[in-house]
Length: 177
Image 1 (cartoon, one colour):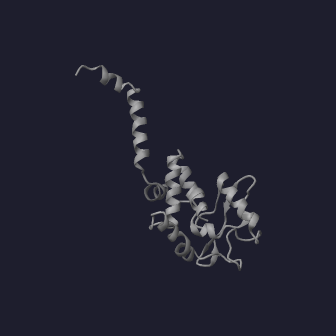
Image 2: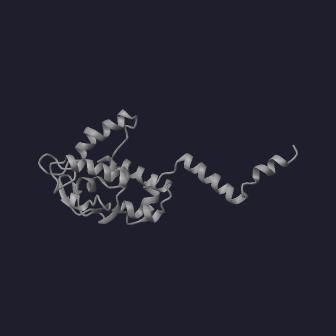
Image 3: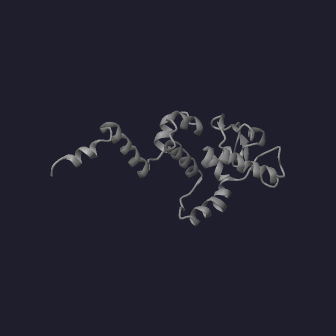
């Protein structure tokens, strides 16, 4: 489930409401058509079709192969109902976060990580906005996408190369001291 948050940027309700009929493992789109909140299934904030990364598709294929319920929810309880997001958070996500030294790990952390990594991978802000299903790009850029020092440094170095054509070092080395 956590991979769907990181690799596809899905909201927790979208993950819990995901149905097998909305996942095309062959062509790899994933349709967000419903969401589960506190045990109830309803409409998601944003209906959309997203590209399904191959690594997530492979994980879902393995999950499908061992699943006993192949015509309903992708992640059902034993009774076929959606899981409780707060129970999953308390029983699985928070303990996993503590184990890796990230006790603040939560469902939104997965979406923020997705948005930040999309930016670092070169996705446009509009692509990130569409992927996350935000109505306003400012939500995507101001709240979800976080700067990282190594990415900032690399960007500044690339910009310096553009401005100086990479010859500033040669000019500095040729100057008398």
